[in-house]
Image 1 (cartoon, one colour):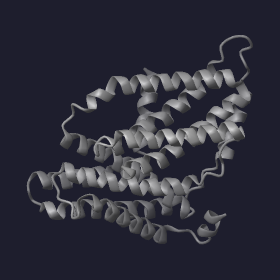
Image 2 (image 1 turned 90 degrees about the vertical axis):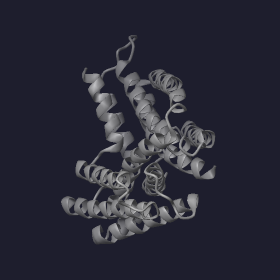
Image 3 (image 1 turned 60 degrees about the vertical axis):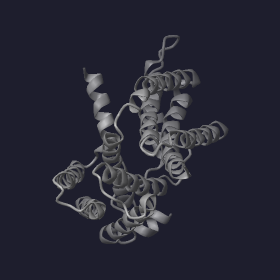
Length: 244
Length: 70
C-alpha cells in the first residue's frame, strides 16, 4: 500500500507546489476572488471528470489496463527522470518557484483589471494552472493505484500532499521555493519508471523474479542508469551549482 | 477548436517533451511487445530486455540533450 501512497504523495507534492505558485500570483495581483473562483471551478471540473470516467476503469480488462497505464507511466516517469538528470548535469536550468512567481506577477500586473466586471484573465490563469496540475495528480493516482488495486492509499497520498502544500501556502502567503523540486522529480521519475516497466512487462505476460520485489530492482536499475547518464553528461562545476 | 487543440497539446506535453526521446521509448516498447506477442522472447527474460532498452534510451537521450545544450 505504501508503494502506491508514497509515489502519489511525492509526485502530487510537486504538482501542488506548481499550481500554488500560479494561484498565489493571481491572488497577489488580481485578488483572492479571481484565484478562488478559478481554482474552485478547476476542482469542480476535475471532480466531474473523475466521476464520469472513473467507474469505466473497473470495466477495462486488467491486462489492457496494465499495458496502457504502464506505457503512459513510462513516458511520464522517464520524461521527469531525463529532465532531472539534465538539470543536475547543468544542461538545463534548475526551476525556481520564486522566479516563476515573479514572472507571473509581472505578466498579470501588466494587464489592466476589469474594474467591477468579471476578471477573466485572473480567473482563467488560476483555472488553467489547477486543471493542468490537477490532471497530472489524477493521472498519477490512477496510474500507481488502479493497476495495483490501491486507489485508496494513492488517493490518500495525493490528498495529504494537497493538505501539506495548501496549508503551507496559506500560512506563508508565498511560493514554496524551498521545496527541492528537482530532487522530488528525480525520485518520482525513478519510481514511476519502475512502475511503468513493471506493469508494461506484466501486460506483455513477462514473469518478474521475486514478483513485487522486482519493483525495487527496477528502481535500483533506473538509479544506476541515471547515475551513468549524469556522469556522461555533466558539465564541469554542475554538481556545485546544483548543490547551491 | 483552438481551445480543444490547446488542451490536447497540454495533455500530450505531460508525456512528450523531447520527441526523439518519446519516439525511442515507443519504438522499444513496440519492439518488445511484438517479440512477446510472437513468443520470441522468454517470459523470464522479457522484463530485463524491456528495462535494458529503456535504460539505454534514457542514457543516450540525456547525453544527446547535454551535447545539444552546450
